[in-house]
Image 1 (cartoon, rainbow, N blue to C red):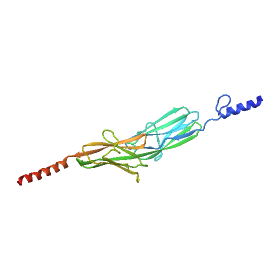
Image 2 (tube, helix red, strand yellow):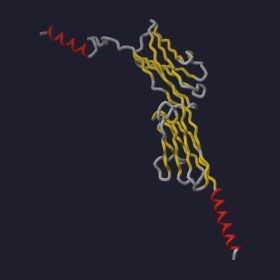
Image 3 (cartoon, helix red, strand yellow):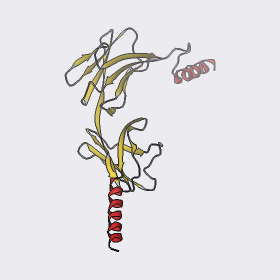
Image 4 (cartoon, rainbow, N blue to C red):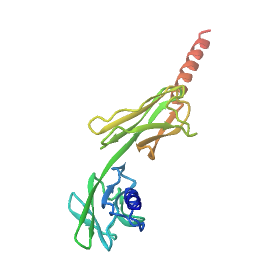
Length: 245
């Protein structure tokens, strides 16, 4: 009876992944996780990362390589910043990219190498887009069309428009909005203002990801010249009528 009880206790302990002394029966497998693709504007800074889970004991050699030219990126590289973070059962290798100085889509390969020569690789993607705002200049009371043209994109972007009071005008009366769709790498979003009454700056905001917005200003200029011309024409007509009497 005691012998059977001992067997049950040992089986129960092993089912919890532990031996009778509280140690793990087997170590978890080392694996790598890569951050989602970085999608950003040419004038921004983006970060990609690779995380090694359950790293082996000992020192690790860690590198980033740009795949287009196989350039190994060092911590002192202009336009880049390499950093590491060590947590419980994980090591993260980060690469911050200054997109102003690196102006094209690319792949960046992270590499972890252990003391015994084991290697873990991951590939992070970076996509850069360009936004060109197009404002409008109209007469007082006329309609106006503003637009954001987004080029070199790899997916449809969510777009919103805000006025100077930071109100989302997409659904406000007097405005009509087209988000646009990615066609051949280009997406055009437009905002139509039914009746322009003053100079204003609107904001076109793009969302490569929900938590990574990018905003650009779009200007509206309103002139009273049309109204002045119409008033002048009315006054001239009245003057002619007065002189006829």
